Length: 412
Image (tube, rainbow, N blue to C red):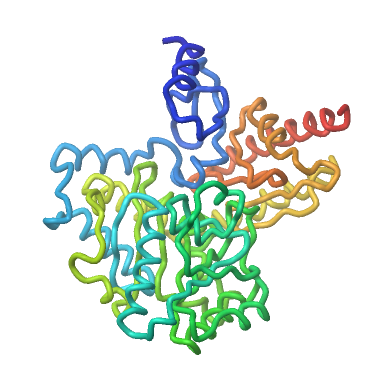
């Protein structure tokens, strides 16, 4: 089929819950992808933070090929070697002592929510079942994760949603102290909020939540599905020292996106004390711990858990953020640039509010795939494997796109 025939078939066949760009991507290598017409793009969205090592990474491809030729699936009725190896790597690099594997970020957060409720049912009275989440959060599309997200735009039409979630203003120390209390069984927070516009936790805020959770014997659960695994320049975003002295130690962490390097996999990691709540029969996932996905994730983790790569992410992130600020000043485009490492959001000025999708389209026309976060923020999540020359090339293309965008908005 031609490109136009493929797009027409997609519009005819798929449930219309997405609105993709009118291109069909055919192949990728590193930070570059090509559409069916042969046009090349720099992928500065990384599949929404999934392809953190770029497309068709050699190490990941080799691991997948080898494992697919040996054993594809076992179910949770049996052990398999890649899932055990991956568990050892993840647990050896963080606070956690147990891991549950699943297929996506939403599933990882569902597991965390169930763990929190089950843990509280075993240790506390019936009134202690509330989970505190935050304004601007995004925790997934399943019903419980959607209830935790507390954004009417995502929730509309899907009620009644599961109860027991209480929303608190993000980065509001006083509000957190008022809301977290005797009824709280867990607090679920993103160290850097992604979908609402790239909002990092304020210095000391995660540490404040840790103290409140300790005071009321509640679990602190960090959602690092988008911001984890090197994205901010630390292996995990909760480890940044300004979150609290030496970083913050949560009870539960959720991962997905970058973990599989393009293959679907999620993980919920927990302390042994918290994990004991989920005994046989209490939770499961047919495909969780799939050997091919775990082999891919093991290869991804080996490459990301590297001090030199993380230092490069911090350096490149600082350069990209400064470029965006400078471009914003020259074109009068951006009121603020937020984020950490290679997780950045550029907030449009009030005069250009609502036009983030138009700027994203300008970037695409100039050969850079970017993202938005709402209607007012251009979101950049380049692969962590990005080369310096590719970064310079991407910034040059974005600069030309910004010039076109400024002219188009001015003409309107």
